[in-house]
Length: 53
Image (cartoon, rainbow, N blue to C red; front, side, top):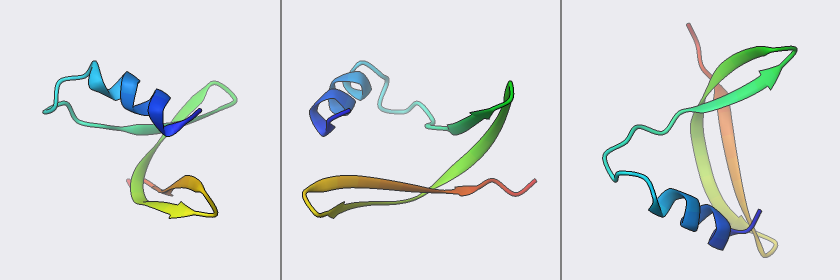
């Protein structure tokens, strides 16, 4: 996926919508928090941290 593609997808969302990240493993969803979005080596890297319950 490119930044352009991500922007296009997000542009269709309401600006006030909450963003939630999930990881799917063995039919189970685990919620994650956004940690950072950085520009590294000509890439956009998005890191997350596991949601503590």
